[in-house]
Length: 355
Image (cartoon, rainbow, N blue to C red; front, side):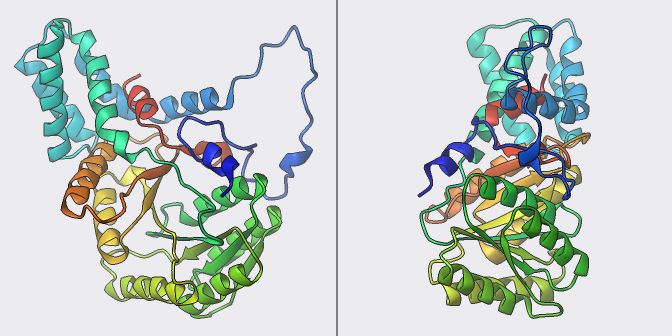
């Protein structure tokens, strides 16, 4: 198992070297700053820089929430305004009721009387709700670690795979990509750019059967001693039943190539879609039994509260299926650059949302 992967892919740890998505740019050739530059402020730590971008990305959601705490007293009117703000942020009815109930209990225990103090209490309640989603993606328990990635069209699936490939390859892992999105030529081309840029191998067939491409990639990964096989599947809506059946077939065929695979079944969701994102999670989980999520495009959205709804769903799912693996949020993204995809940290997210 790669100890560096566990370090990088654990919440709160600094990311690998990052850069913009320009495939022609070699990140390893960037000039280094002089050892001593007294007139220049020291560089911001990578994680701190990420937190700044996260706060900026969640500003629209946070503005509607924090405006509630500008009142002069804590009363039912304030709680009603906060309820409306949480619903508008797409936290959902169940998660909103849960957070309001938690907040009222914390107010009673703490004895606070100023509305401004409620913000920290709400951040604590939200962080506690989100905490179970905070788990590291572990690479190296099996060789190869097979990661199957699904999502609807436009969620940022192929780009997220490219970013993850970059981080894995930069940390020394040998990665093999499977271009199982055989319906969209642009997806294969995009994945080929990432493969070339990161000097990793790719299995691709124009107009080939997605399951066959996946099988060949896993078999090749085993034969070539690769550390990771990343399978990119075609984007689809959960209402497209024939395409969902094809996803199930891909997963079955991967298992035929390697009985323990896939090690991870990830769903990429667009944070801008709010409660529709939760509906996607439920539908894809029913079809594939998900093991993790990547939430993209949180920058500029007013619907960042959807993670609270996902957290409550994940808690209920675990209670109903205690023998199933949990569905954590491995990564969240707030932009198109490499450094805009980072590991999920519950407290960071809660504090950024209410900054």
